[in-house]
Image (tube, rainbow, N blue to C red):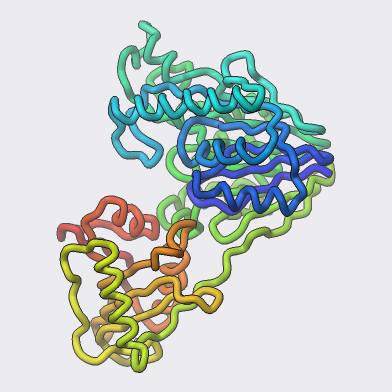
Length: 439
């Protein structure tokens, strides 16, 4: 049996390749994903990994490597060397010497660990194949492109730090009994000044030269990752995007539209709510099943008898999170979720998953004709944070509020990480400082 498993992941990659009882893991998500990966491997009866491969040295790809090396025998570790010449970190923020030095030390420590428990191969020019059972992947992007441009006196990028580590990401292609598979890592398709590395994904697509049935979309579906030429060659049938569905739809709509237009039967699947397993049957035939679906979040009314409990939970939240400025308190009696279409006022909400309260929000509903929602408070209780909990809560809340006639949303925030969270849903900054709006 030959299968590709895409584990549930948001803004990270965790891909398990399986062939006749042999298993290889391509990227390991964040460090917090280790237990979930191990639980899935154990559920399959995996006792050994033939290899673990890290496509490039970003924390959303190498994160669980140390923990997995401590838990399973691994035949070989493949890792793309770290350039230490990054202009941005894995979150897209400006990087400097401190970031590059810290990541270099982490890379060297992981290399030492891998070599102490396994065979180790640095992915360089000449390392051009990755094999597992019936799979024979061709590797693209084996050069240290960043360093080559930096050290080449004839390059326009000579001694200029211009790129992030995604420029060094590897990508993989295999054709198994007529089924084409392209796993794109975080490889980008940027218009670079150096012609050798310009539009890398277009170069790779030309090398592939035909359509693919299964496409792990590069770099979580965002940014400049393909153009019309790339998709006219690959024409993917199933495109897997390791990102939140709302983020792809709202922020990277052009990429989504291009993937859907690639062929009449194209499907785009995001790994935010569940993972996917594809079983390859030959001649382009596959079966697909969902795995590890996240339980639904239900917004519940905290008005009425629950108001006092809500206000106490909110007080604890502010205290535990060290929020220095008390946000606005409720004005007047709380409005029930059931009355949003009829009334203005402040509406307290619990977020419930599998019978447990995992978070809460305080909303201010304004406007009689076109109702607006000001988000005064939105938080996830500490034990349930991470793994996209906040995203699932807002997705469900937004759908319920729009059903009740809410036309727009506003939130005021100053913290850069919180701003990125809201922008993932399409919130935009306007002329008023620190106020983000979603229509």
